[in-house]
Amino acid sequence: MKNQIDMTNGSIGDKLIKYAVPLAMTGILQQLFNATDLAVVGRFSGKSAMAGVGGNAPVIGLLVNLFVGISLGSNVVIAKAIGQKKQKNISDAVHTSIILAVIGGLIVAVLGEILASSIVRVLDVPDEVFPMAVKYLRIYLLGMPVILLYNFESAIFRSCGNTKTPLIALVISGAVNIVLNLFFVALLGMNVDGVATATVISNFISSAILFFALMKTDLEIKVSPKKLKISRNILVNILKIGVPSGIQGMIFSFANIVIQSAVNSLGTTVMASSSAGYNLEIFAYYVMNSFNQTCTTFVSQNYGAGKDDRCRKTLKLCLIQCISSTAVVCGMILIFGKPLLHIFNDDPEVIKIGYTRLCYIFFAYAFSFAQEVLSGYLRGYGVSFIPAICSVVGICGVRLVWIFTVFEKSPSFTTIMQVYPISLGITSLAILIMTLVIKPSKRYSLARKSA
Image (cartoon, rainbow, N blue to C red; front, side, top):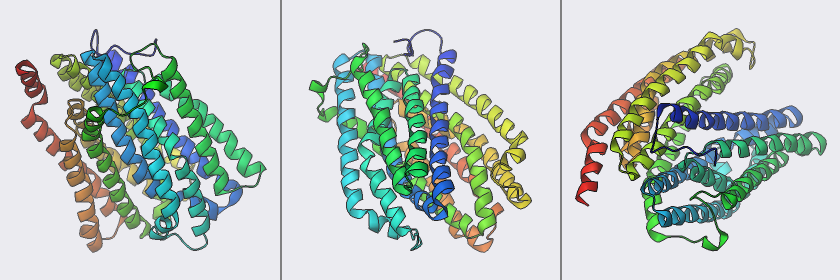
């Protein structure tokens, strides 16, 4: 397949870029499509409907982050098996991943239907928004089987070096999502139920496209419905790597909820400013994060192939490319930041505070490079617990303590922003130290020779 990348032979640098760019574009497009949902329902159904959609973001983020982390376990296990050229392990991991996604989605969907009202009530949603928030959450969670299936199928494709096919599926389903949003909300007069239904349908389309592609491919990741069953050993390996990553994502989301509450306490202007800044900074984050996943997959395959020198070279090149590409994007956003912030709001105070957020966050990204790429490097060797613990304690722990101590004494937006470089600096240093202590390339090379 022309979209596949040979990670274990030939040059590395150009292949890293070829792999990372579609990953970054996928994240950016997903963000844009989510923004479209809010824009359509806000434009045609009003603020209450918009709040009904946006108010569910924390709980949806928690659930999706858990399973995205678990799908990373599938990526690592399959990529390692590809590097080892163990066809049976590849097939077992692929089919186990598909079943895991569907079963996990069904469990979340059933629990969601039962607990939707309770979940929304915990989020302290205003009474006038409550019915719409519950309706949106119930419909959205009904689509969890196909939402999770897309994420796991994407992980399968990425494990063999193909990041373009998931991107193409997302582009198609995203376009359908926009059309259906307008059809259900603008033409049929639906509100949150229209947006949620459009999201479920579009995710069904993207997952169906990838499933069909997996059935038709001539690569080792080919899916056969007759082989769809769970391999216990493979499942254990996937969960061993994926669960720590998923829990890390959930706790990270929880910490962000606490920080958002602190931002909200500073008033409407600060809320609007922070939201505008976030919608710009997230583009740079997706560029940086793409090298985390790139490093993981390349290291997994080369580790499986016994090519530890290529693992170390992958780490060095990912760091260089991550720093340079993210720095360019951050620089461009800072140069054009104020005009871009005008798109969201013309209030000079909103623009000033929003730009302040950009400056603090991009300064914090100077520490994120090491944290993102080194985490991906360790996970490529199957070491998932250590980067998860470092991130949970260094990022989430520090931010929670900061909000409940420093911010309580000095409640200002600047105080909140100061915790980002501090927490990321501590986390990056911790992961760097653990990488030097563990020396994964040397340790696993010796383990392979003695096996």
